[in-house]
Image 1 (cartoon, rainbow, N blue to C red):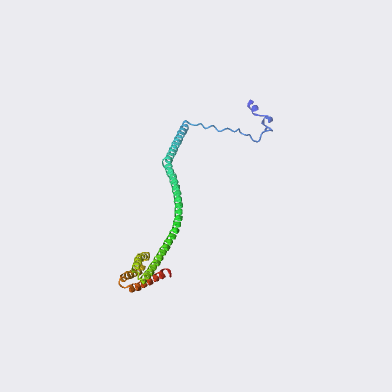
Image 2 (spheres, rainbow, N blue to C red; image 1 turned 90 degrees about the vertical axis):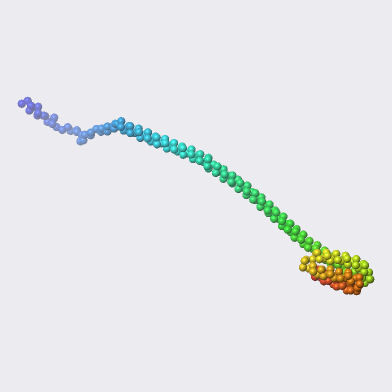
Length: 229
């Protein structure tokens, strides 16, 4: 049978090769590339255009905002800053004027103090002068009365009258130099002098007696004001 011979194989053909690898590695195959469809490309293009528009609008808004801020600075802040600087300048000038005025006030106060001291000295001098004038007037009145008494003792009534007429003026001066509350005593002296002038015509003795009273009154006034002759 011819088929049986073909089916019988030799031992060499049926033997397993001696050098056979234990494991046969299969070759790695790369993943097939993903092909972009037309729909994906269109969606990506739309998204890019949208984001570009958003960026443009955002940039535009930022530019507009920046311009508005700049305009606000120049229209609002800058004038305010100028007013502030002007106010600082005016305040500095005012402070300088105040310092100058303070210096002038200090100088004026010093001058016033000096003038006040001079005025006080002047018042003291005026008071001293007034006191001297008063004292001299009282002494003159006493001298007149003494001379009138001497004339009467010599029976020179005319000379005594001339002297006493001068005494009347002296008493007026004394009265003006005294304080108002001290003038009453001089009024009494003037009345006594009028009595003496009236008595000289008829009663020389009475006139001499009243002149003695007038001399005593003048001496008492001098003692009261100046502590004695």
